[in-house]
Image (tube, rainbow, N blue to C red; front, side, top):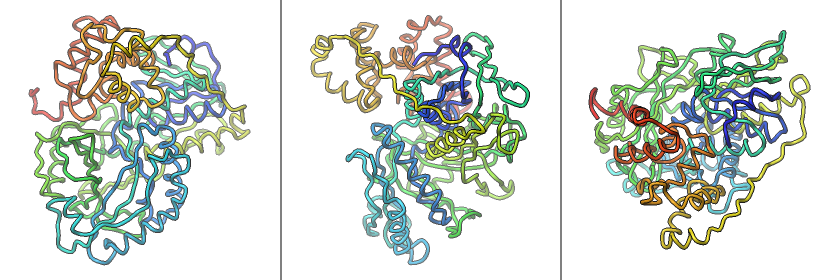
Length: 559
């Protein structure tokens, strides 16, 4: 996968997709597989914004039981299954626990009934899933076991716990990239740091887009018969006020703490403020917070929501935002005893909301379902569409619906399904390198398979070609979290990584839990700088860009 701005300006496309988050990435693959000539354009890096802000849970829609919305449940179940089948090395089963109290709506009996219904609705949840990744049905545990899992939990009225299984994406940013890589294998042309500045029309019909290559500041015209705007909070840039409730966004915040709070399960605990989900048939009266075990020593916690009234480009998390989340968590679960010093990372993003009361805590009502909006005539025949994405998990469902819409004869019509272009096998003798690695080889192989699945051999081939690290000292640029020099070369030359942040946050797991130490960042910046011809000043700027992501965790002026 290589960026080729010149080719983008020369080709005639059926479809240009604007926005390389999860919705744009999955749609690019679906459209390429359907036989369309597709270009994906992202103004920053793939998966850099809202798609990077999550608890990593790939939801199967069990929450929609309280809405009686079986259609959305089925969409979520099918989408989760699709993601688990697509990237089984990244999307794994996650056991979840909800403590039960009394014998009413929050009681063990009601929960067991709910899970029995859900298991019937999700009868095909394991279709085409590898055996080691299959999801068991729901069950229940005793109050004593709940107290063991959640030390210090409120015991008054505790009757036990309900267990269900969802999935967790070990690296959501990497998952976005996997879809982009696969789309390129099906012939899609993709480019990051390529900002779409305008949609062009021939009369009433879309004819292409204007694109500014951020690396050269050059503007080109990309010809296309249709455009899908999947730019997340930046939707209005191209669609303006034609979007329903344009500009209504909520801040969504998740934090990572360096404490493994609970054993064995992700745990859902009720918030302490009243919350009414106006679309729910069964109202629990509180919003749920999830505590998700992350890697070996961390817990992800969220999600909190509040209205956002500023400009999209001005959005950033502040220290006060994080402190408010910590205060909320300590009220919900006092035994956590969290301080700002425990927080090692924070995620923030903007999600579409329907309404919120500025004078009432926890009043944000989020959009419940993603939407496909046809611009222009009633049937959208001018070729411009917008996807207002809400749920990370249901991106495959939205992509399928968007492709079916494009296949209508009023739009693009059907094509011969696309064909997969397998990577040309490299004629390399791996034997000497494997021998040189010795006892390190099984560790390196396991690391690569865990992060890249079936692509691990392509990364290993880079190691073989380069004889290890270019610094001549070690195959590893970082041992914990692990990162090989060969991986960074692969990111640069095969995955369009051009900044230090691209590598730290979206190609590797180096910065997924906490800020890498300064020596690791300096080593990595030096390594990339030699490959990309950075000056000393540019290397410092790249390191500063990574550190800025962690700035809300520190006092002003702190390091």
